[in-house]
Length: 399
Image (cartoon, rainbow, N blue to C red; front, side, top):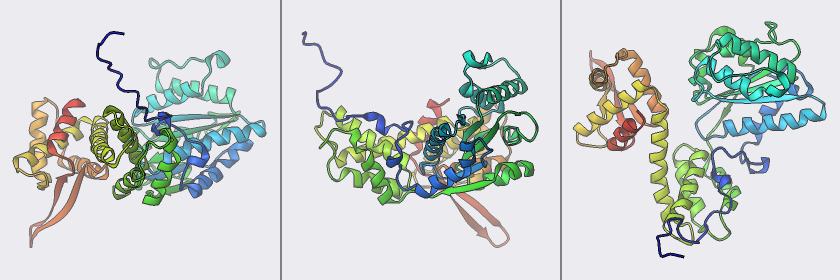
């Protein structure tokens, strides 16, 4: 063996089964902590499907990391198994509306997941068909393969057109499906999402509505402990799990964030050739998670939201302080100049106000309404939560 540098690091093993700490990992039921009532509600809503009948359509609300997607996936998988006992066939499609944000993309993805071309003889190409043709093929697939199709639309508020909700929720009523039926589970971070829907969609889609509240520190601690066998025995120091739980609970009870921090802490221990994961690793991991979260949020934001954020960051830098407020009109004026720089048409002030409200919801900025004085009305102050340099870097990296 030569003396060349070994880039694969030391033999100190931290992780035993790192998959348990991946966001995409779907745990067993006994690893889903603090969501017994929510699972029961979802099960009751879709229970008719296990007998081949039409399930209730469901809208699920709650902040990021409160278990909405996890519980929806788990309960639909359990429904498939229960239905087999009744000789009922259920098909499940999961659509991430952040990635499949147009009606055509969402229908294509649904059809692709539910299809088995060798069995149906129907192809679902990634592109090249009209939206109506994708629908026609989807109905044929569902009718030929399943008694019931359950379709999960995650982050449904990001879909550009509500027509898919109308089509899916009224497929049987309109005669598109004749041999089977369909149920929809819509998942949204926005509690007021329903208010934006057409009245006809509300009446057919919003049959059951459930709100997932944030986890508290005790629940997050139990969630992390239930996944601690991702690490080798004795690797986690005693204070690590309570420290991660406290950080996540302080920041809106996001279990997904807590799991990410724990995984990053383990990776930092590995990178530094440590024999155990320490609280110092957790503090470093928290910083890494913040940067990672911010980059991901910004990368998924529309181009004009990135320009508004960049304007906010540049103005914050000019004011020489990380916690200085930026008035909406100030941000709008610079945003328009950035649009000119990029040779793009700017949005109206009202739409930029909406974007700022959305950025506050995502915890990228904070907003506070101020009174300007008698006869002058009020105005909104906006503050970046993260360092402006980090914001600018994230905006540029995601272009």
